[in-house]
Amino acid sequence: MQFEVDRDNLHRTRVLDDAPRSLIAGEARLRIDQFALTSNNITYAAFGDMLQYWNFFPASTTVTEPGNWGRVPVWGFAEVVESTAAALKIGTRAYGYLPMATELIVEPGRVDGTGFNDMAVHRQPMAGAYNRYVFTETDPIYDPKREPQQMVLWPLFMTSFLIDDFLGDSAVFGADTVIVSSASSKTAIGSAYQASRREGIHVVGLTSAGNADFVRSLGCYDETVLYDDVTSLAHGTAVFVDIAGNADVRAAVHGHFGERLKHSMIVGSTHWDHQSSAVMPEIGAKPEFFFAPTQISKRNNDWGKAGLDERVGAAWERYCDWTDSWITFATTNGAAGTEQTFRALLDGGVDPNLGYVVQP
Image 1 (cartoon, rainbow, N blue to C red):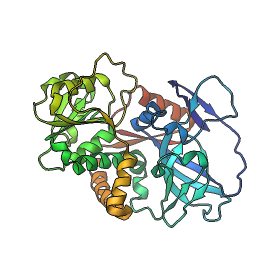
Image 2: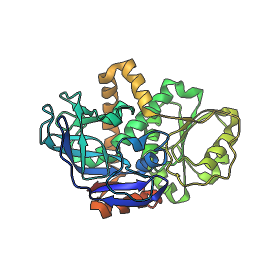
Image 3: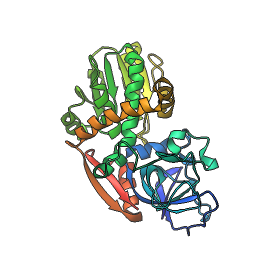
Image 4: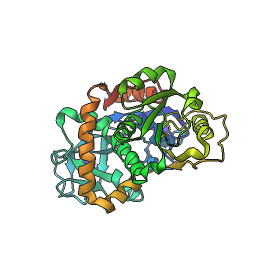
C-alpha cells in the first residue's frame, strides 16, 4: 500500500498497490509497522514545495493518472525484513522518517551502534536529520510502552524544544511575552510548555472558541485568547510563534504590537486552507520561517551531538510525563484508516487531546 496526495489539491488522494521490486546490492527493505498522523504532516504537505518535503519519497511512476502526485512524510517505526547491506541485519527495528506506505527501500550508510542514514541519491540535498533512522535497541528515549508518544509527540516536541531554544538563545529578543497560534496543536503545546519554564515570560495561546476550554485546561499557557480578540492583548513586547499560518491572525498580531513585536516566526500551517483578506502591516518584525535543522546544526556545533541529545532527552522525559495527564491515542488500520485520518486532519475535524496512530 502506498498513499499519495495530489500536491495541487490536498483533498485528492489515491492508494496504490505497486508490486514490491527486487533489491539491488546495498539496499534494505523496511516493513513499516506503524506511524503517526498529526497536523504537522499537513504542514509538510502545505509547505512541501518550499521546504522540499515532497522530495523525500517520490511518487509512483508505474501508475499514470492526471495529477501532481506526492507522498507526505510521517514519523514511525519500521523493521528490516530484507537486506543486501551487510551492516544492516534482518530483524533490526528503527524509528524515523517514512512514507505513508507498507514498506520503504533504503540505501543504508553511516551504520553504527545507534542507527543508519538513508544514502539514496535523491535524499542527499535535504537536511540529514530527516535521513537518520535510530535503532530502538539503543535509542535512549525509546520505551516500548511509549511508542505512541514517540511517534505522535517526539518529532513535534523536538521542533518545540528547538523553537524555545532559539528564542532563549536570543534572550527572547528582549520581549516579555511569547504568543503561540494554533495553541491546541501539539507543536504549540510543546513550545508553550517549554516557554512556560522560562522565568518572567508570559505565554499566550491563540485559539478558536471550540478549542479554548482545552487550551485553558493544559496549564502551560498563562492566557488563552480567541483569534478575534487579539487586540485585547496587553501592550507589552512580544514574539510571535505562528503555527496556524493564518495570514489574518498574523496581520492582527503585527498590527496590534507594531514595533513592540520583536520577532515573528513562521513554523507551521495548521490553517493551511485559509484565504486571507488582510494586508500585512509594514511595521514590526518581518515574519521569518523557522527551519528546525538549522538550529540543530547550530547546537551540534555549540554543544556537540551528545550535549544536544542530553538536553533534549531530559526535557522530553519531563514533557512526556506531563502529557500523560491530557493525551489519549487512537489507532486506525490500513488504507481506509490512513485516508480517513488524513482527511480529518486536513479539515481540522480532530479532538486536540487525541493522537492518531496508523498501522498500514
